[in-house]
Image (cartoon, rainbow, N blue to C red; front, side, top):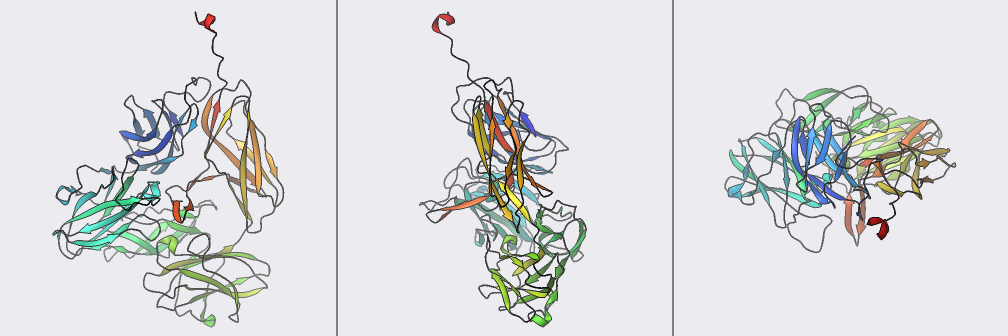
Length: 560
């Protein structure tokens, strides 16, 4: 991490007349290249200015300038590419974490005015990332792209996954101004993706606009300082998905690739997947040689491909445990079956991923015995995809069956079925990303424990990285307990502090940090709220602000 700015973390923090922590909505532009120094806007409320900023990882420094609300962000040449979290803070607390993306190459900056087709900004160096913003209500950004006949344009926009308050859309026009294609959602999130094979050569125009998220009573194009986005344009080799759809950790994986503008020789790739930690369930391959490629689910066993026919129990395809298989519901009415072995009382986790990967299949999942009798069934878990935690009633062979709940199918109805031992585990979460502690006081933090797959053992919650003088003792969680209350206190002479701390939950040979979920959803009178998916879904870096005792004001005679 890096913390820079005019305030000190401890000891020398001046007292202020502030009444609230700063509010950071976004950094704009949100993406910056390695080896660059940038003047960017900090969007939010910062009183007084200058503010102080913190960012995860190494190689990035953020310094407030005298020109409010501009900050200078320096990204070193060896900074690791990828998304980071940024906070603003002052003597009274910290903002919610927001995103900064470190890139290999610089984004193209959106240039206004570009609301009209005649003023569309020309993009001549695809593949390209464009950093833009819908500045005001009614704003429409337009970009001109030259396509050859038969060339496919793949336009992918990120706004929702950046926590922008916009449900964006893409619309494409041909050189005559005729609308060719429109896309509102990519099937996985509210962010759009548009794929268009050009029938004739010429300059095409791509429009970016959006509606408010969460939705309001007004139906109009939205825009404000917070509606930032990144638009990726690919017109060369790009991967939609590989087959198999998953990655086996720690080994070399061979994939067939499905995508656009692929030369005949590019039909398969071999990628070495690192030995990722067991709690890492998604991984972004480098996709060297391609202009675009998805992140993939990660498993511990081999990744197989479905072999038809397998609709009948006697023809079920063998699947090892742990293991995964990529299949497809095609034609309509297709049901795929896979056999696996289990021991009596063995607990297994069976998961289907389709909607999570952007495919249209609304799947159901069932476990059957060797005679075809259904033992368990699910069609929705915590998403549109099904999942079963199942305990084998006896030693033997069993069958996992996958089908379409809506009795639909087709060439794009892909899914990934994984079967793995459901080892006892737990997840720890907190309801806030930051906390304050005044000198001479004690605060409580509640840690929620979600026990998984039959976990019942005792746990211990301990604080880490607390500043000197702050007391926070470990707390034990009884067997089957689902909550811990950790108390920390500051002495009356506590020094000022602002910085990240951690809460670690340990037990039965496992340790998990308590995390704050950045991706969360809810409803307000039926209107969806929050974000189901983000570039970073959660953080274990919880923020602590220690507020020292304010010195007594001098008496009038002492002021003379």
